Amino acid sequence: MPRGFGTFDTEGIRWMESRCGCSANGSKAYGHTNSRQMGTEHTTSRSVPLESATRDGLSGLNPIGLDVLTQVFKSVRVGLVPTLLCLLDKKRRDNMANSPILKGEPFSEEKTAQIAEQFFRDGFVYIPGVLTEDEVTALRDKSDELFADPQLMERTNPELADVRYIQMGAHADSTESLPFILRNTIELDPIFRDMLLREPILSLAEAIVGENCKFCGQNVLRNLPGLSIDRWHVDGSVHFPVTEKMPRHDPRLRMPVMWFTVQMALNDIDTIEEGPTQYVRGSHYSGRHPNDQENPEFEGNKPVSILCKAGDIYLQDPQCWHRGAPNLSGKTRYILQSQYAAYWAYWRFSLCNGVPVPKDALENADDRLMSLLGRPRVSDLN
Image (cartoon, rainbow, N blue to C red):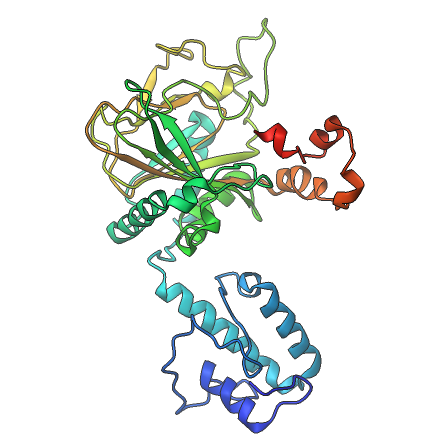
């Protein structure tokens, strides 16, 4: 790119045309080729840094890239704007083409509605054959690579909900501490960010928690033999508790869903010994925690095991009683989990508590105030 952003010389225009195949007036410029890979842009004064552009276009640029583009759009003549937009679009498309994760296609409106209705009724729904074998292999291999990273094993970030990037778990028999859950995955590799947009998953999320839904968590469970979360539970707390005199929520209601989980199997889970996810159908209407750790039951519904193949997915209401059965086999179970939230919940519980207060102003603040603001001190986290 030219050295200054106030004007663009012929060389700069040709550079942009060669990068995106467009002319300065936005039309196709034939004959230009690009032998360099888009993922490694020069960051000297003669180029625009376009690192990590994603399917969301501008939102994937780093702050430097956004700052440069702001200067560009303020200073260039209008004729160059289509060229810049074309450049960004090509970067986005190249990233998509290079990703092992497919874009996918939404289900039909009718099928999407049927799946959502079953989810609202039962508290979970199983959907076979969503991810390809290549996608599953890429996700599993990347997870193993990150689990094996000794620096990541020690890495923490007290600003995040999940402070540790690799959560340990105790072996059921030996109590040996083993790597169990890979946290904060969207920070670690683009493959996990791409999974958030994978169809038909995203359109199913919108059908359940509404359009403009928001990301609210992602992790990989790697259940080595002897590792599991085998206690029956709801995620977090009971959102809509009933009184002792109430047997359950009225079945005519559709229970509100503030957020939910998509579980994606990254290996075959063929038997109960391999530790499948288990649910009690309809228990999200109970308004209670599970009533029995050995044999929970809700209105005659007993635990159902999700036996599945790699690439199958299942959607889970966090209020539906569930667990991972003990992994008594010699196989490792891999589950990728993505969570999506309703926009109103994200707005209320994320944006509304993001009011900036200088750190020095809170240096001597009461511990209770720090906790109330969602900024506990490191000693509290430990």
